[in-house]
Image (cartoon, rainbow, N blue to C red):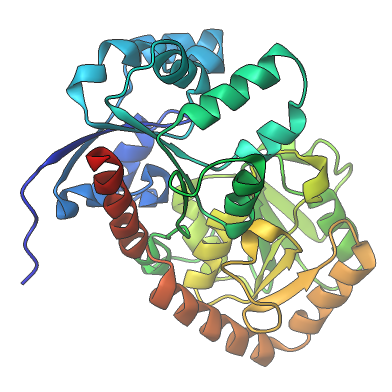
Length: 358
């Protein structure tokens, strides 16, 4: 019998975007808990975890994304550890200017590599670097990010690597046939601007493959006119499991990492969700996906922005559904063994306790 540990640590989550609706949707079963980054599992490890979001933070969000977390300055005594996916300005004030030792501040790194690469000179670059290196710990969900920070000078005692986890049960729940598309089709989805749907659409143009894409309109502006075998819909988390489960396989096209656009981790959530559903995956080569996905074992890896190579990979799996299924089954086991949200959350909790004790 598993018993929850007594609460001995207070943890405050500072999310990069609004989470109140996502938290409510999660409780209703309409969204995965991945967006909560382990919050709902912390009590199992003796941690009282809450997240900071109110009318003031939402008002500040409308003014500037950079000042959303400033009100946390009045909440510092209410927690032992702050866990943030953003808030570098507030971190800079708390840790670099005011030199406040407690609470400890832990960054969840989904974007720092691209941020540092885009800002190499000037005051902004200086402030970003001082804020990042003032953190008490940084947790990266890929070895590539972990090594980047090490090369940038972050000490080993602050630099943690924890592979991300997926809400396995959410993606494997029973679903109905999706309304958005019917028949045989392949599926692509994603919210961040690191997706390369233009190359994907070109790859299936004039082919027998039906493609459906779920995303935000901003990510389709460069695609142009869609061919008749391509359909799109707005990205709605509750609808993603059905679209994955009923597809032949999944494609995750991302722009080259050297362009430093979007999240460092573009594709991670969708990759793990698709693997959870026992789907073979075709991805663009990307260092931040390499920890979760082995080429030719869990799917196929292609060169970014290479239309011909992507088309060849798509046709290989489209014409060989047995191969796609076999690869998908292996991918699903990979997630069950290594990348569930429960596994991820336990590793996070251990780090929070370690950092708090320093």
